[in-house]
Amino acid sequence: MCGVIGVIGPYNESKVPFWAAYEAYRGLLTLQHRGQDAAGVLSYDKDRRKFYGHKDLGLVSQAITPDQLESCTGNMAIAHTRYATVGTDGVGDLQPMVTGFPFGVGMIHNGNIVNYHSLAQDLGRTYDLQMLTNNDLELMLHLWCQKILEQRGPSNKPITFEHIQSSASTIMEKTKGAYALVGMLAGVGMFGLRDPNGIRPLMIGKRDSENGMEYCLASESLALNFLGFEVLRNVLPGEVVLIDEDGQLQSSVVAKVEKASHCMFEWIYFAGAESTIEDISVYGARLNLGKVLADKTRKAMDRGEINPDFVCPVPDTSRTASIGLAETLGLPYREGLIKNRYIQRSFILNTQDKREKAVELKLSPVRSEIEGRNILLVDDSVVRGTTSKKIIDLLKRFGAKEITLAITCPPLRYGCFYGIDFPAESDLIANGKTEEEIAKWVGANKVIYLEEEEVTRALTTSELCMACINNRYPTDVSEGREFAAKRNKLKNQSHS
Ligand code: SF4
Figure 1 (tube, protein in one colour):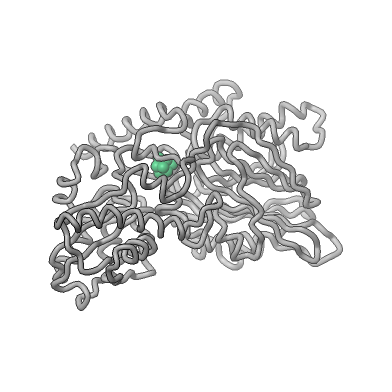
Figure 2: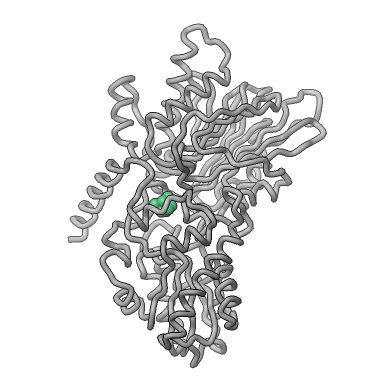
């Protein structure tokens, strides 16, 4: 899971130059929650016929300094904040990626190409191509360039939208997986595309300025709102859009599937609560998840299985669902855990050791609220269970009597091959365990999960990927499974 943003303003020599990189950087700050491993920015300056970019490990504000940003001139820019899945070999694997040959093109993406290894081998065999990084974006960059090169032939004709459509179509035919991609073509404009299932989000915004129309492509509407862009629409699944240097928007759906499969986790956990994804408010969806969870919880209360004194969120994501749950049940809402806002999100941190240390550091219990009380603790999801176990243990150390764990996501039993770094299936707490066993393992009196149909109802759409709970992947994931099996074997060997 990553955050992507691209901004393009009109090119106008006679007026004050539009500083696209500054806008992209500001927008990227609002997408920080989508990845905290690294960040980067890339601009194209038409006057100097040059790309300028910087990328580094760390948060957006650490990875890109004010001086570096100032050197990124030009009227179009893309920026990326990274959550690593494939490609973790240092700065070389970071985004944006750029090439100057056979023409200038820079790219960023959010997602994961499941058939990366076989495609990389194919490209190597067919074109003698040498991959320089482990990042699947490099593969898409090569596919894109190769297709445009073939179409233009030796005459170097100008790149047209038809060329761009064909390149997008090639990517969509050859790759299996999830991607929301934004790129810049030197002297042409900015483009964006989304995989045919629309697994990862991407939307377009526009803003009128004294120089003309400015456009923004971003993972979430909160970035567009923050920058003052009007949300125009989502980039459709299988669609490619181009905003050229004159501010003309062209688009075409080049691949279609019967039904889109948007990642349910965007609403449950990843996206900012103030965002709207696929025209569905994230905040509203989380409130609904809490309300639906309340129906199940009430049944357990009516049966006398639990008797909670108040509803308590695991901050921050589950706060909204907790409000919906508490209001529906008529129970008080209390914040029994206070989050240290300077510690990173634990699920996104890239090693288990870092995740466990982050739990200890990031949550402080409020003894006055907790002591001697029965708590209905709400979390958005339970992955390995180690975080829940630590939190429940912490609450008990501060005097909590009974703890019921209510979870807005159904049990996660299968891996994600679309850009979320889930552990091996055998490490998922829900894999092979009953709800009673899970409750015992995490130290709760009871766990209450939502079911698949209840999530669909709460999110008001059935166009969802829910593969990590139902094993129904919207694309072929056989290569991803093979890769995961090899990785786990190696991990187990190194531990034995
Ligand atoms: S498998 Fe799960 S986390 Fe991955 S894209 Fe699908 S719903 Fe999202």
